[in-house]
Amino acid sequence: MLYNSSRGANIEEGIRNFVVNFIIQNSSSEENLKTQRALLNKLNLVLVSILKQEWPHNWPNFINEIISACHTSLSICENNMAILRLLSEEVFEFSADQMTSTKTRNLKASMCSEFASIFKLCQEVLATANQPSLIKTTLETLLRFLNWIPLGYIFETSIIETLRSRFLEAPEFRNVTLKCLTEIGGLQIGSAYAFDEKLVSMFTETLATVSRIVPLAVELKSEYPRSNSRDQEFIQNLALFLDSFFSKHLSVGDMGDSFFAGTDGNSSSKIFQIGISSNMATFTFSASPRSRTGKYSRFAWSIGRSLSASCMKRCKRFQSPISTLL
Image 1 (cartoon, one colour):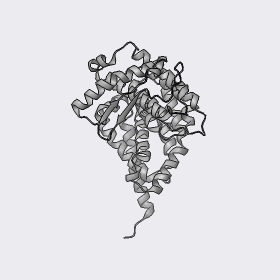
Image 2 (tube, one colour):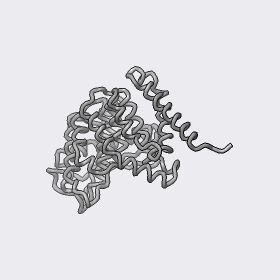
Image 3 (cartoon, one colour):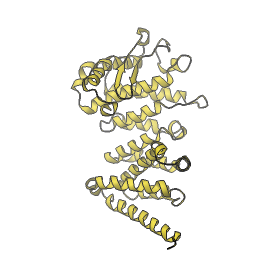
């Protein structure tokens, strides 16, 4: 029997619509979102698999549809954020082993061309939402976007200030927020962009906020082992923030002097360094006394001094891969 292409297309569209409607049905309320979480996770993966085959050529309105659905209820918005996160991961992180280069290139182009509406949605949620689970899901989704979106979305909008002022000090959001700021601090900016001052501002204001969470007087070497897992994770994320920022932006003849207002300008001295091998997390620290004069450089120095002992001891004791520590 000859294959009927139109019938096949109708079947594919029917499957697609069934999955979409089933997802909406099971995420239509906060109670459903909680009780059907495992099922929704599987359904979201199925939908992303369909998108990899159907979008954008057979489903050009997908982004508009998912964003419109986000305005129908907070629970649907939260699940849709998870779908967008999965789509970003599939397209920008896992695509090399799963799709052809042409397919990957087309999906990346489609994602980038329609990202303005996605980013607007993220901004709206982060600026106005009060539901913790929705905020956290949105922050986790934004984290997956930060390493590929155009730099203007980061440095020419209020997103950095929103992250720092609204979420960095909140215990339930501070870890994922600091991961977002770490991703931003580790971006390769390039000389074509004039974002140096904004990077400096992000760094100093982030450390000013962190110093209210972890006061300068706190001795981390003794406090770290007594802290709960979330606080320990925050200290580890702070170490990664410092390392990511310094390793990308603190170099001889580059922007070094401007990062530490109040220091003696010895930009060639590395204040804090973390080395991460492929399977083990090893924390190493070196500091020059000449580098400890500024308020925030002293703070970074105290973080490094304390972490170098406590984190190294913890890693060696458990022989744990980095994924289990962060």
